[in-house]
Image (spheres, rainbow over the protein chains, first blue to last red):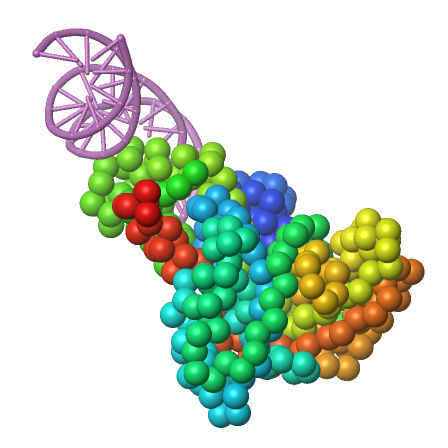
Length: 161
Length: 161
DNA sequence: CGAATACTGAGCAATCTGTACAGTGATTTC
DNA sequence: GAAATCACTGTACAGATTGCTCAGTATTCG
């Protein structure tokens, strides 16, 4: 749907201080409260803002180990595998991908040793031919969106570029 | 820090309806407002809840293509590469990993064609030896945390297991 | 120029937040 | 076993915020 410069600033502000209300945001942005309210409604309605879910740190609830697993699936078993993985709590996300491997999933575990249990749970399923796992050591760039929002907002300035 | 069953229900509730306030949450959970307030403070103080940042959909702001790139780094160039990737808005997250490849990053782009530009920007840097990219086709399990929270809350019941 | 759209500034009733305090039950400590 | 500690409840109050509405103004566009 596209966002303009004000939308960008609003999103940045919300990312930086999520708990501020509409009124405070309007003050910070130097616009009327109604404007912020309208923008927010539009952003949410348009699907730009999916929600404001709490950002929970898996490490803080006992799952400090993160890993990515590339899975190779037996032909035609995709649907079953997806359903299976969806039932595993330690699978935080799952993608089907092109290239080597058919699926990529993000896992968490209580420890490196526990990761073995998780992998067994993931792989112990008809239809998964092979799995290759990479453990995350460091996370230099945590999941972020602000730079992209800034970029998108800038691009809105010159629409036809 | 560990979470108990009430923490779990609170997190679930917040995940399902992020905009509800403390008062409404206390009503839903059947506890006093002060309790919810105290729990929230503890969860945030303990780092379990990192924040309530807006969940922005890259697709909705013009970046519908997601990809994962595995990067191989020249010895000793890690720091520079990290710094470089941090400046690329299309890099949504970056991990250093074990196994084949040294880093894994999540990218977004305006189109498959545009992905080439992004990859060039990512790879066009001294220190990156090789990159292998997998385009995301489907996302059967979007990033989620509720199942894990439920698991963690359950485990709290039998601490020594 | 006229119409449509977006923004401003203001107002109002209802609600919520931050904070405090006393009472109660459960658990821990000595 | 008694005291102390801790978490939760229920209540209270002032101040702030929200949802909503409305009229006026600015800007854009055909």
